[in-house]
Image (cartoon, rainbow, N blue to C red; front, top):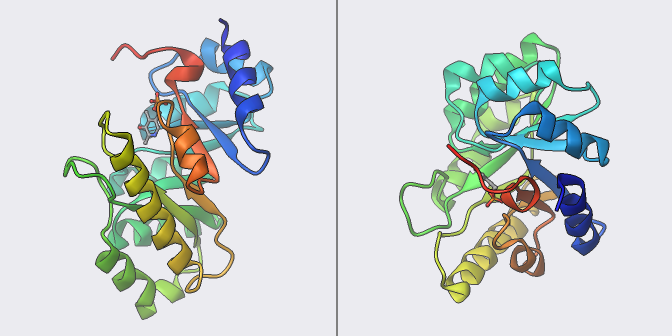
Length: 218
Ligand SMILES: *Cc1c(COP(=O)(O)O)cnc(C)c1O
């Protein structure tokens, strides 16, 4: 099946309120253009340098999402064009994004990443750290970032019940956060292997790579 066929099949299976992020990391620009020609406008990358190169090479009506772990010293390279940063996992990083966004007169939308998986290799905040951030005075003074939701990754396991439990936990944290922060709208959870379950549990944004572009060779 072609990239366009894969995309169409997945889009047909998504409820209309769920946004599809096409995760194009490691894939060549020619593959991204195929997806673009099939109508896809939201792309996710996990390395800032790679995303910047693709931003330069691709049409300018694309929304670029940074879905990977972000190093603070590299925020400056994407601040002028990134449209959503999914993996914000520290207050220091949020402040750096605010600072770089200000230099470009922008407000950058951010998702706070919550650690829901059992592996400690996956990044993210726990609930206490989340609360510390959103209740701090300094947070409310940041004018060039906007927290629009949460992101999380489930454990890499065959255990479907565990994955469902982790998605439910993230959704529950999201529901609580909705009372604290106005105009949240995005709950980013679900990848190729688990996005249907993520949607059942309340996801509004799925990040799908291999089911669109095929398996990755690193
Ligand atoms: C690579 C990646 C995805 C996409 O994974 P697939 O299994 O290929 O769909 C989603 N989210 C994040 C954070 C990723 O790094």
